[in-house]
Amino acid sequence: MSRLSALVAGILSLGLLASPLTAEASQSHKKHTTRTATTSKAKASKAKVAAAPARKAKASKVVISKRPQGGRVTRVSAQPSTLPSALGALRSPALYSSAAVVVNAISGERIYEKNSQAQAPIASITKLMTAIVTLDMHLPLDEPITITEEDVDTLKNSSSRLLVGTTLSRGEIMHLALMSSENRAAHALARTAPGGKAAFVAKMNRTAQSLGMQNTRFEDPTGLTSANVSTANDLIRLVQAAHHYPEIRAYSTSEEYSFISSVNGRGYTFHNTNPLVKNVAWEIGVSKTGYISEAGKCLVMQATINETPVVIVLLDSAGKLTRIGDAQRIKKWLETSPGAMLHAG
Image 1 (cartoon, rainbow, N blue to C red):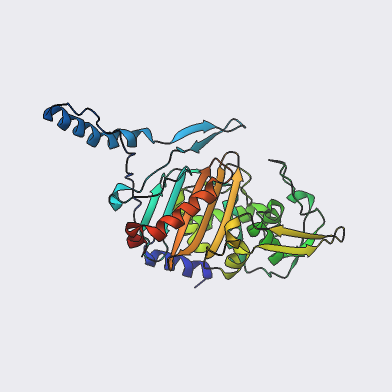
Image 2: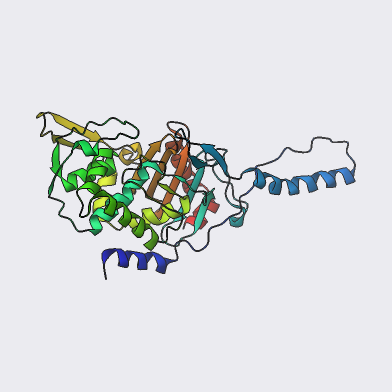
């Protein structure tokens, strides 16, 4: 049995994603302040409050906005959300990422979710799949790869310190793609694979389908294009799959990596795009950040909190530190809320 087949069987046997919860608890409502109201009016007021969640739920539907290129991209509400009502009336954190899911990585228990089925661009979260496909090809990690002009981003014109002409091993290239989200590195992994970039991207999509990621589509190995889309639900599967690869666990959570450039002889140090990997309060098994304007700030992690491994997916955070703040709020909630710990444990 291939590595990927064994992985798929493991995920299915856990029943990780049985059926997503769709109900969301509504926002709290204004209290009735008229002390002189009659009993009948008070009852009527309570009835309105009880009916309000349904109206609020309708207001949180997906919103469509236009891409700068003229296409269409799904964006979702950035309003804070509460724990789904299906989990009971538990006090939960107010998260400001547009879509979010927290799942017990062992039992598949949904601890928190918000807009988990909304399809949206995922930016550099893509690179987790790029690494999986590279490793499944069993290509030698010590094979040298040279960055070429083909690897330069001409879509977003993003900058890079990985100079054209730099030669590193495939393992080092993958390390930079996962840790520092280097677009040239991710592109080079696909370009140098058997069959080239087109065959590589096709394999990315086949792998996604084999993992049950039915609402996911890839068009490039970097995530620079907003055509790479997925849902928070699907990304749980991707993170769980990535966690089975020791190379991805090591590279994605590495704090920094240094090397001497083969182009100019200078030393370069690259750092992790997720500051939480160097926070001693966190025990992170897999980490990946992502950002393009169409996707907002994104973050996915596998982390152990209160001795329980959980998968955290945060998509489309507007502020620079919102995704990190949301992750911190989730951690504090899981550590201090009896209700949350019950579902997480």
